Each structure stands twice: as C-alpha cells, then as structure tokens.
Length: 479
Image (tube, rainbow, N blue to C red; front, side, top):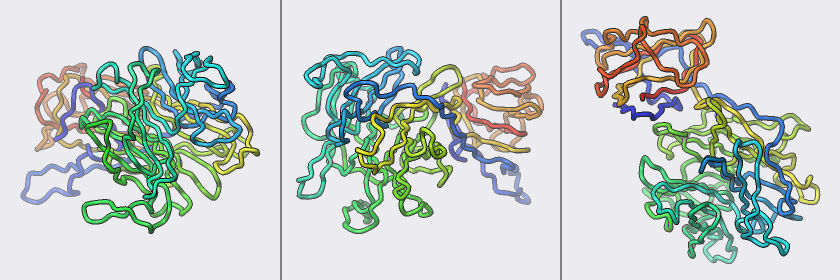
C-alpha cells in the first residue's frame, strides 16, 4: 500500500507505483485485469545555455573555477560555495573555498568577507583553503551548527594506505566555520564528498568515491583487497552522529557493459525536491582515453539501490569539437528553482582535458553554466501513442489530486479512481467523466465534471486508472 503524504510528490523514476498485473484474468477468479500497456519511462534532457552566468574574474581564480560547488536556495537568495585555484598549477591542497550569492541565479555577487588572507590582503570572498567540499543546511542542528561542511585532506604517509581524510565543520551562517578537530572519516576519496541529512530516515548520509580495488565483498561485510580493476566508483555511509561515520559501503559501480576506461568520478547526489522517496545523482563520468567528462543520470528510491536509466548515454553530453563544452562538463550540487515551472542544474564547462598539462591549458577556465529543465522534468511516465495503467493501491491524505503533465494538442490524459480490489470505478470518478487535461501544466488540479473535492475517499485504499494518448506524466500529488 502506497501512502501519499500531503503535499509530497510521487515521481516516476521506476515502475514501483504502477500495478504490474499478471497478464491475464484467471478462470474462476474475480481478479481484474490490471496489466499496463503502451507506456514507457522516459528520461528528459535539459537545455544547456550557451553563455556562462558565473566565471573566474578574481586573482584567486586565476587558474580556474571548478565543478566542486554547492548551490542552495536559502535566506531569500541563491547561495553558492565553490572551489577555485589561483594557479599556476592545480595542486588539490592549494584550492580555496569561496562564497557567492545571487538574487536571480544569473547575476552573482562575490562579497568581500575579510576572513582569509590572499597575497597579503583579506579583501576577498575566500572562506578557507580546503578541497572537495559540499555544504548542506541541517534542519535538526542548533542554530550555531545549522550549516555543515565536509572536505578532504591527504596523508600520503599513512602506513595502511588510507591516505585520504574527510573533515567536517559547522557554522551558524555558512560563512564563519568551526572545524571539527579530528577527521570524521578516514577514507580513500580524493574528490568532492557529498553529505546531507535525510529527513525520511532521520540520519546523516554521505556519498564518497571509492575504487574497485579497495574493496571486495565477503559474506556480510566489505574487506580491503589488493586485486581487481582500479576504476572509480561510489560508496555510501550513514550515521546518527555527524562527527563520526562508519566505513562506506559500495552502492554504485560501473555497469558491465560500460567501456573499461570509464570512471564514476564524482556523484553529484541530491534529493529530488519535495518528492516521496526519490533520489538523484548527476554523475561525472570520466572517459580516460578521450580525456573528457560528461554527466550521466542515476535514480533511486532509497539512496542505496541505483539505476542509470540512460545506460551508456549521457544526460548532458559534450558539445561538438570547438564548442565551449567539447571536453569537460561537470555537475555541481543542488537544484535551483528559477521561476514557476523551471529548475536549474549548474554545470562547469571548459575546453581543457583532465590530463592536459597546466602549461598547455587556456587559463583561467571554468565557471558555471545553467542547464534548464521543467519542474520535476527528469523522467516521466509516457505514452507515444495509446497507453493505460493502474497504480498500486493508494491511500491519500489530501482532498485534491494534482498532476504535472505535458498533453499536446490532440493528445489526452484521463484519470479515474477505482476500487483497489475490483477495479470498478467509484461513482462519479470514471475516466470518461475526467475533465480535459490538455496542455503543458505544472500541478494542474484534476476534476470530474467540475468536481475536485476528494474528501469522501480520503484515507480509503483506492487505485488510480490512467489512460494516455501521446502524453507525459511527470508526477502526481495530493494536497
């Protein structure tokens, strides 16, 4: 039974909410025919703008502004914590965490913070000298520790080979940071580590990078192993205590059909905003032979079991030779709402390969471009022609059903409400009574001959019967 929480969206990253049926009606039984037909799960790709909105224009950014950045809607503005290098080389431990803010996500301010000294002056927006950061706002923490930060530091002298340490810090405002003295985790992750608080499981969750030859699975545990292919992958750790984390466990590795020179370089994890049990990764995949990065999409219901719905196809691919994104596209962290019905993922683009010698690079490089997608538009339940399905049994808390759809001219999407066992329509809620849903609508209220109020079936188990013709359904919610 799927309980639809008030205001929480159900989005179609998999078939979990759709009744599979059994493909037949058994003789002598009263089971209805609930098998779906004519539908597919469709991934939608964003529009990448051609011009950057954020670029290196300060002395401490003379080398580059890279993809290790967190974007957050907070305190009435859009805030950004980003990594930059002054050059002339890109030693990881010489990177800076800097801060910027914007009212519209297009025009950015880099305020003078007077915190960190660069070239004898504190007239800059640098917060500290750290590498591989992510920032989140902790809804459970006291005000003095409301913002949390993680980063990596290296210790190549560790006799056990654990040369990466993940450190943490807390802050009341995201500007003034207090470092936790000891590492919160000793782990071989030398790039951006993503940390958040999961309000569904009431725990802190961290995603980091591993390599295949660090771990091999033994019964009920992961153990270090010297063997295996050395390819980058993604691991996860869960804790109640932000200051202490258990050893991460591998959750996403290369698909066996991936070419052998592909690495999952960074994970780009984020929760799907306001959705029920939906997680996203915007993975930077490094193609060693071509020396390029592009962005691939992964989805999950629980943050542990992941799917790449496009398989080997990039969600954001490199551009044509000579274009601004022909070598490197890197995902940042965060999804930003720019206006009603539109979301933004910021990405870093540049024309330098990962292994290109610094002296041959075009300096400075990097910055952030906007990739635009409709609200909840990452994936949909789609019928290219006719399609039909029933949901698994639902219990909803609200009294109004809303859907996020694209129904073109001459297309159709109809919704009926049926008894969960018999499949018979509830009186007045059949698909033929559903009012027209044609249009490109973000959260349109469903009605049946003008009736919107569903209070009479609130709390009762039912199914939705969905009939499509040339339509996309991105999500549904009850309010």
